[in-house]
Length: 318
Image (tube, rainbow, N blue to C red):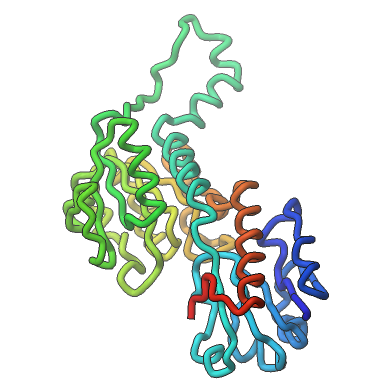
């Protein structure tokens, strides 16, 4: 049995992968090299992958391939028509990063909402040491208590965010992008109502035909000028040109993004025009990546392989 990691860099170099040695020969490549990926996959029985497309051009030489393990939840990298025709099983991992993403949602919010970059700079620049009063009121910020938090995508992560936002005293509204979520735990509203009524909007939805470009110029124009927008879902849910203009024109107060349309970020991304950290923070798709979450991810992949080899279905996606 040969297990091939095609991009270990996506898991970090501090995560122990030795557990996979029990399955047989393990070969690790740290990152994708598009002109070599198909050769690296050629003699694999099991491939462990994150972003590399799993299609005919990558797998046509992989005659012995039985299983593809995705080290994430999304499965859009897989050509299921091709893998199905080849009878190649595909698994993903679920729930491993919920606590991590919920935590990062609030990290992004407070950085912008409480203008933390400004006040950190105020102290470290020496201005506070030169001040003649004990506090500073230069840049105003508000309490979360009594505010309305709108959630787009009330899945496991969205519910985690809702629970903590409630603990801060927020009212919770949600919009179901699929229309299938009918929980009465929180107030369900239509999209326009969520946009117009929310002080904070956080996105935790998957990317699909219904959510791509959901937050466009029209949507942003309906938001409060004091609102903060957070995206912990997928980058293309927000139109980045429209968001840049909304921030430049003070149509909304701020944004916190962990995902963008093209990752890594392109040098001409319009969001790079926003230099004011009171308005915008972007982190490089790290919300999922606490040490604990990455360890859980590896353990989930291990358990998926172990179950597959025992003839059991575990996290089989198609």
